[in-house]
Length: 283
Ligand SMILES: NC(=O)C1=CN([C@@H]2O[C@H](COP(=O)(O)OP(=O)(O)OC[C@H]3O[C@@H](n4cnc5c(N)ncnc54)[C@H](OP(=O)(O)O)[C@@H]3O)[C@@H](O)[C@H]2O)C=CC1
Ligand SMILES: Nc1nc(=O)c2c([nH]1)NC[C@@H]1CN(c3ccc(C(=O)N[C@@H](CCC(=O)O)C(=O)O)cc3)C=[N+]21
Image 1 (tube, rainbow, N blue to C red):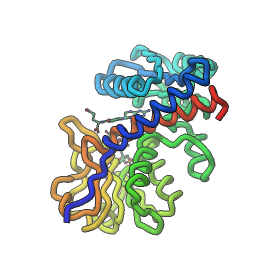
Image 2: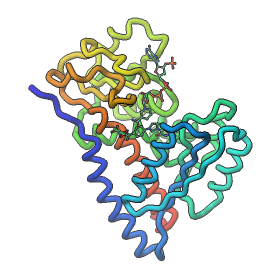
Image 3: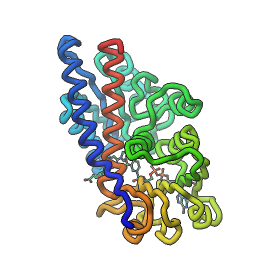
Image 4: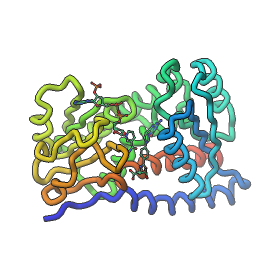
């Protein structure tokens, strides 16, 4: 039996068509106004610049505007906070993305938390995380929310399933675990201090790899018939899970590339369109 390929790239492309239609509608009844995403890139890390460019390109494909804010490596926390404040107060901006990581002298948490809840379309604030965790309305953190949208699109059952999330970072592992819990999975969170990692992973009906090390999670730690979500992304198109040997014996898996990555970007623009509709059309 060959596993179901969870095609994030195709799902993102399909959703972009729906988003284009919603933008056109907004343009016609919102006096030509479209939602606008502001992206903030601090410093000159080439990989971060590429991701931010990909986000701007996705906006363009659906006819949505984006404004790109670039700040130098030596930017201070105060300067970044002032910029975020300006974007919070700009009624034409409907979503704010602050690209992670920021240079080390900046208090990233303080800057994330300065983003107004209604503009937190990347789901990075403590307030948004807390609300999501409590089952209240909030935009989801883009990568884990993108993963939830893939699982939903493919009707993958979560209730009562044992999900093992490897990684507990603020914008990936931790919100992922809370979203799976919210969907009634039984959730185990593993991290760098976890003992007997392989034994935990062997129990998993659903495995989410979010470790940040290429092919760190070995194929033989994963049981037959599991659902495998690889959130990792490394140069050369490798994820955090050793995927190749699994393709024949798991139930479903996200490929790298073409799985989680495209849905991260799609979730960001999807939530920006939602935010824009609320602000422009009062929806
Ligand atoms: N496709 C996409 O859209 C995105 C992909 N990514 C990718 O996802 C991966 C994870 O990213 P991110 O969460 O930001 O990374 P971080 O480095 O912030 O977090 C890594 C997590 O993995 C844990 N970890 C590290 N080593 C081990 C180990 N030996 N055993 C168990 N757990 C370990 C860490 O534990 P501890 O907390 O104890 O340090 C930490 O919680 C990366 O490959 C990144 O490129 C990230 C964001 C978006
Ligand atoms: N505030 C914040 N929010 C983020 O969502 C965020 C971030 N900071 N910092 C960095 C990570 C990384 N990230 C990716 C997005 C898309 C792909 C993606 O689309 N990858 C393609 C391949 C891209 C290629 O061709 O190289 C794929 O997997 O198919 C990957 C990684 C978002 N991140």
